Image (cartoon, rainbow, N blue to C red):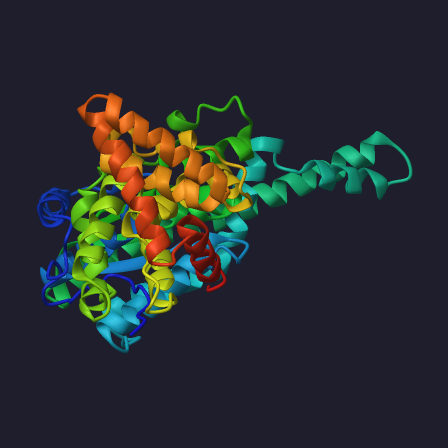
Length: 466
């Protein structure tokens, strides 16, 4: 049965039950760190795209919740359709608190604090913050406001000056009054975190997870960082950001210019960075292989289980050699799964070739396109397995290449050359020549005379699926 790849299932009662990447020691270390924090704190969990940040954060959140911490999760990428991230963030807080705490009594201490936070976050602060930025960058009045004011008077700079002075005084008074909303917001937020811990019997601190920040619109991502630091930096709350620092740095420069010290800018918002190292991809490959039931597929006649073993072994080696991310490995297994399951039973795609072509398709699309068009050379394809220096694989690739891209006469001529080489060459050359000769004969015997093209055709079909 064809089974699609699904996200890692995390059991709230046993967060590490399906952990195949040894995440538990890291999660437990970070948990002890968070539990020791008594001040406002922002921690980043950093890794390049596709290295497993999201499953790691989900597992950590489940672990913290199993230890009675209140945790809230915000997917920044799913919410960057709104203009201001504060609106989306407060909205998600409302949903999460209701889900965790149930219907909040508006007359309770928690309810009163939350009502103030919702009111301020939903309206007042969204007006105050742009005003504060305007006051810092352009003076009390924006440039356009000054132009409009000037345009409304037909004569004399005296009236303009008088109008500007009055407007400035009113705006300053309004700003100073409304600025107290920020103070009230932070005060109620700190009180809310304290009351949740006290009344609900939870452990402190409350932990807010923000994921996919580096995939957002640059203006949304940076605005969210600024809101977190300036509005939510209160005792009792710790923020955990899942980010790719390199991508987030691009967002900073896109807003503030190429010469901006992006790393220095981000250090203003992040108190401590934790780098998520690359896990053992071989273990991850085995887990995916089992998750889509490929062992059972290859054990069913007329297939052979050794084909599945060879496929997994060679894919593991090649993916590790090319430093595939977890995301790239997942995508590759989706293609492998679809390719083998849409191949007729009487045709068996060679496992080593299938593994090789899937890796080439991801790692070197240009070479893959040349192969599909019949323009590649065998030397370029051999370069992908050269580090292994294995005569059996080299012979297989050359035999497949001959069957796919050489005419019958050229193949026979090359086989004669190999036969002569087997007689006069050293032991390794002899073995490779004999093996190539045997592989060509096997491809011809089984009717699989286009072993590379047939796999490319299967992968093309797999690519049609979404």
